[in-house]
Amino acid sequence: MNTKGILIAILTLGSITFANAQQPTGYFFEEFTQGKVLLKNKQFAKGKFNYDCINKEMHFLNGATDMIIENLEDVDTVVIDIHRFIPFEGHFMEVMSGQNATLFIDWKINPKGIGKKGAMGTVTQGSVQAIDVNTRFQRVNGEQDLDLSVYKMVTENVYYTQVKGKLKSFRNINTLLKLYSKDKQQLIKEFIETENIKMENPKDVLKVLERFQ
Image (cartoon, rainbow, N blue to C red; front, top):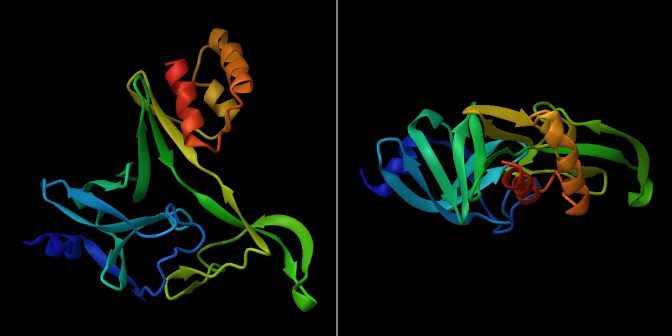
């Protein structure tokens, strides 16, 4: 089977013609980016990929058609530029490796309402609320149809790291600290403050894991 056939065998058609090079809000890359998919049978194929962080879908551009990787049980790894993704619980997560630690990033971007658009394009402020992406999140030709004047993109990643050979999850500083002994927790707090660590930045999170591995 040729490389194109390999990909078609593991993909399901998503949206129809992809018209614009610029990707809509909520995607990992600003545009489809060169990469390759490695299958568990050791076959691989190159193409252009992007990850939808809202719907947790790996997209592949086949000519002018936007396709979605569906049969994840056949996939070992997807590498896009310098980023590596592996299947995880029905979607993908990114693997970021350092010299002494590995961080697994379950990317999630959640569009949240910040108000309602009124007359003359003005926005009425309201309480922040999550969108049910299955019922209220619309797609137009496969693109996220969001008006950024009334929605903001909130990063809500779940991180994983290995502790004594087991995968442990954390979302914020408090849940990260619980992975360490009490004698290390204060040192980690001081390091986070001194280094101005931002938990929404995976590179910062990996820096903490590397320091206190």
